Image (cartoon, rainbow, N blue to C red; front, top):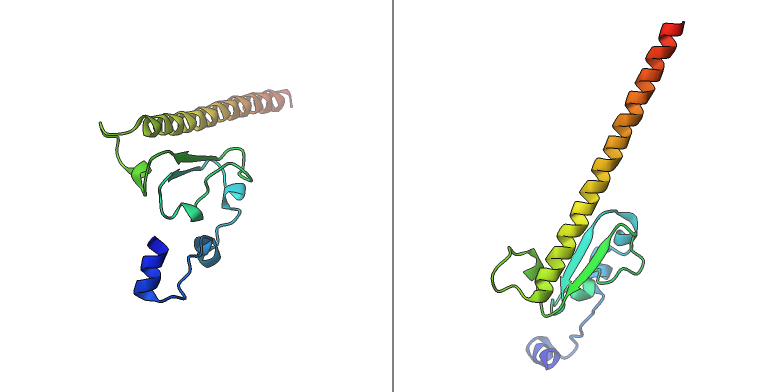
Length: 130
């Protein structure tokens, strides 16, 4: 029905191109090459056809979430009393994922500090022997 209205208003040769965002702006493979990115879309988002909506082909550190019964940019808004249970669950997943990334980074930094301290101690002891 919407296509017919557009064709009546703008011309009969008007045809939807679901892959238009990828064709026009690129972006294929972005989820495979970057890391620690969360891609969110609403189920009813009209530009979802150009979004990353599943984990197929994504770097394992990335996450794709489609939030049921949500429209365009609803996932970017602040928490409200009107949030659906699906929106709350998505936010919990997002927050948990980000906390996990931060925890991993802290752990790696601590290991790097311990390693650097051991190396420094070893270098000091070696220099005292010579």
